[in-house]
Length: 428
Ligand code: HEC
Ligand code: HEC
Ligand code: HEC
Ligand code: HEC
Ligand code: HEC
Image (tube, rainbow, N blue to C red; front, side, top):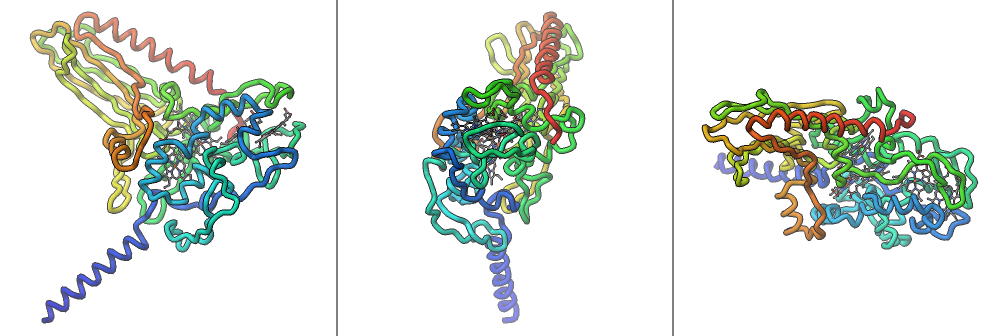
């Protein structure tokens, strides 16, 4: 009888603990709240002199900036099929909108108190000012520029048909930090926040030694009229290229391949060393969304393209998501950090026509996750989710020397533009 009672009590206690874990401890989203993004950017009214807050209406006078923004991922952060699929997976919880469609005007509900910081328990009521068309504009002009009926900007002397105010923060990283430095929540064990791009940048090479801000690389400088018929000014293109843009990713990655012999003979062992360096990103590569990773691969192929040997290594973060979030390992590259990957192959007696292929790929997510989003969460569109950033072939014969030196030359060339295309701004 006594044992029976003990078992009963034991299971009741275990049940209670599991209940408490799921309702009070287990996070519903993979990040914590911080006061600046726990709530939407408050309701904004149309500044005097303008007829609408919408990006398109700003574009009547700021045409080029509008056209650039329209091509950027900021303009699509809400309709982005990857966002939509993951959002569905997270039961369309409201908190995601605070960065992907951040103005109160863009959100269907008004969020009040958030008891004990638990997003699923937040008090919500319908938003009478909700504009579904405006929601689709995602990170729209007003999200960064409009507060209390005033348009904020980087200049001290402009004359505009709308109220303006100089805000020195536009030339610092302050404008980006709200959304690009997500923190971990209680019972989440990350090394840095789940999308902690700002923390990876703070105090590192490009900030400290070059005085670069986020805009230096993500909003290239340009001299032009910033409004129709306005004077020529130094401003910045509203492009924000990042992980979805192969050219941008290539700017971050320097690759060099060396071999321990320049004329391998049949029967010998040959060793290749591939060095990857974060040559052009102000933060870790990959950064942001923890799904991102690089693979470094070597293949040995014969004349017919048959793969005789294959080796893959990964650069990214390894996170256990269930039953609790624990970051196990992070081998991403900090600015200017490099890592060597070795590949050794024993040449057969008949080595004629064999070659080694070295390849570096960037992945937005894994093939498996991609399939899960497609089959379970309605991922639509055929947006590429991985692409090659480096690929070279090296013949396993006397021609190896030439192939290696050619690869070395183009490695130095491909690193050069980084210094010239990213002009320094004021340190943030
Ligand atoms: C009817 C034309 C017009 C419309 C519409 C318009 N602007 Fe302007 N805006 C101007 C002009 C003109 C200037 C001043 C340009 C100059 O001095 O070089 C300006 C200046 C600015 C500046 C720079 C302010 C500073 O001092 O740093 C920003 C930012 C800006 N506008 C944003 C917006 C946004 C956002 C919208 C839409 C909500 C918008 N504008 C709508 C004409 C317009
Ligand atoms: C209101 C929130 C918000 C602010 C402020 C903001 N961003 Fe973003 N940014 C986002 C969101 C959300 C995405 C992701 C969109 C997506 O992929 O669906 C994004 C994407 C990006 C990307 C592209 C990533 C990719 O995958 O291609 C870059 C680069 C970027 N932002 C840079 C900046 C910079 C630089 C600033 C400061 C000038 C800034 N952002 C300010 C919310 C913001
Ligand atoms: C993610 C934040 C963000 C969004 C969204 C955004 N801007 Fe800007 N904008 C900036 C920053 C940062 C600068 C300062 C660039 C610099 O240093 O000159 C700026 C500068 C400007 C300027 C002054 C000219 C210049 O190049 O500096 C105008 C005008 C302007 N933005 C209009 C717009 C319009 C119109 C939209 C929407 C189509 C828009 N912005 C969307 C961040 C943003
Ligand atoms: C020295 C240039 C440089 C600076 C400074 C820089 N970046 Fe980047 N950033 C890059 C390059 C190059 C890439 C492409 C490589 C990649 O996606 O991993 C990139 C990628 C990104 C991405 C894409 C990540 C994703 O999920 O696809 C985001 C977001 C981003 N940067 C935000 C920022 C923010 C915010 C800052 C300031 C705190 C910043 N960057 C500073 C060069 C820079
Ligand atoms: C604090 C701001 C913030 C919040 C809150 C936020 N995001 Fe994001 N999200 C970003 C930024 C910034 C990026 C792009 C850069 C990066 O990868 O860090 C992004 C990128 C993404 C991407 C990658 C999109 C792509 O095209 O590859 C997905 C998916 C995503 N977010 C889903 C969500 C979901 C689901 C939620 C809510 C559970 C959410 N986000 C909440 C800021 C935020």
